[in-house]
Length: 335
Ligand code: BYC
Image 1 (cartoon, rainbow, N blue to C red):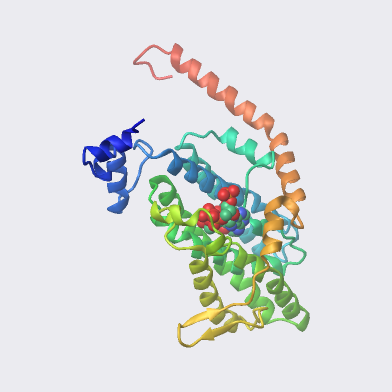
Image 2 (image 1 turned 90 degrees about the vertical axis):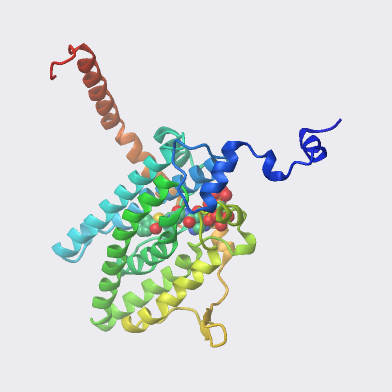
């Protein structure tokens, strides 16, 4: 039997002729660096990829509040406490913009939350590591938020409008977060020997996991090629990781900390840093739920969700009453 594709070949139609008007418009928008908006037609796989990436990103922001939330009550001064609280609140805000962006693609907040607390959704590997000392707040800000900026600045140009626009604001705030982390480490590195050691230990613990944040190496990254074609991602995981290391080296010199990679060197010919081997077995173990804090992070989120049930119920009831009142108010009368 002759398939429709075979028939169009017999008729001499090119691949482009066989595209629907909708597909052609979508391809043109992407090719011309225009934005895809929620009202536009989009391929189902594009929608699914965006829901996957944006919801994982939102979950990472929300789970990412925990390692730092751990230090709010123990921050060393009122000023440090106020700054840390503002930062953790910013992360809640980032999660909310991102959940809203994902909702424009046809998934509900409840579905996403269910995927997270049931353990079916991924969130960034980085948030499954513990924060035993105050210096971890510095290392997270400097390294984790630093990695987030390098990864997310190109996402401001993501082809999906609501995601790109959310990223613009997120990146502005991440930039403040990175500086506050750098400043915490700088203060510690100007302190006593114990404080210097505490800062170096934290950098030793967070350096490698922050490199792994960019995702698996390009030859093991199943989603990169298609996401780059769709202009969701603009650079590969390895390209961004490389850019990040190039940014860290001069900053580490200013801080006076050592990056814990004996193989790290500048290749004079390429102008790029050669880095040591990342422990990908550890990364994939964390993704499978076996990192040092996976169980604790999910349990905390589950409990918070259950404890917040009355707030969701009260808000829904308030919205229902408001809608009822609006429906009962005669037109022209202000309720
Ligand atoms: N952790 O084909 P690949 C923050 C998964 S929040 C866990 O390269 P893709 C902050 C990946 O999902 C930081 N999973 O995927 C917050 C895929 O699995 P699925 C979060 C990871 O999507 C609070 C599989 O591995 N940032 O900065 O092309 C305080 C194969 O990977 C990870 C974002 O979410 C990982 N590290 O590229 C402070 C940014 N890496 O889904 C800071 C937005 C990979 O096929 N996301 N996987 O089952 C992205 O840019 C991309 O999704 C990634 C991965 C670069 C992360």
